[in-house]
Length: 264
Ligand code: ADP
Ligand code: MG
Image (cartoon, helix red, strand yellow):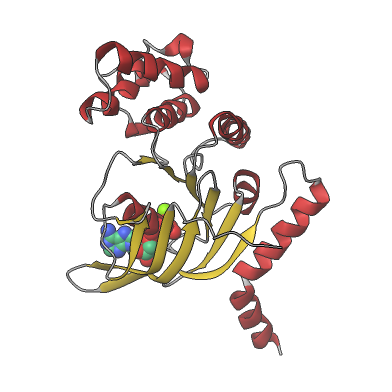
């Protein structure tokens, strides 16, 4: 059987060390992290708080330069932010409060020069519709719930049709029910457009549900523990639970060993 050439990754993160210099300290947030994201992956960065997930996402966004290693998007080295990478944050206040839903979604389309006038409005409405907010297009952010604001932020990011959508714990501040609903919606959107997403979470169940592939990071500094495929979307509860347990044990193996050593 002949094996074709391996497709080139869309996003290639190679040996990336990221540091913050404060007046007193040099904080190493991630150490020599490697991973590759391919087109239409739902790629999840999973690890405990402080393991450098947001820092990695910021570096992919081009807001932070690696002190070691490099990040390539479609083969080109990432050196600054760009409309080919749109970010969705956890915070509900990421929208412009004085602009309507429609104007918020249109804003990057116009500001980047990607589209003008009518075409920008049409594109914005197309994505507002995809996140089920058509009726709210003329509403302002303060009139919306947290979940609805997150939908607007997702529509705004997706309307730019970036190479990769970067999502930093976008549902972490939502109640459990809304959170599950938003996860389902994201998967429906993916079924519709097969966008590529790099999704950050500290929740194991969320990683399994949203992700097609999951990168496990250990803390202080963030290093790659393992990369795993998630279970298929139609997996039963037992298979999902088994993967949850496996990931939990891998993420917390060091602590478990430490605790066991203390008890010997
Ligand atoms: P996560 O998103 O996984 O919770 P972060 O990427 O926010 O983790 O942080 C990784 C590490 O970098 C933490 O130790 C954090 O305290 C540190 N850190 C994050 N932002 C800054 C900053 N602006 N200045 C100094 N240290 C920072
Ligand atoms: Mg974070």
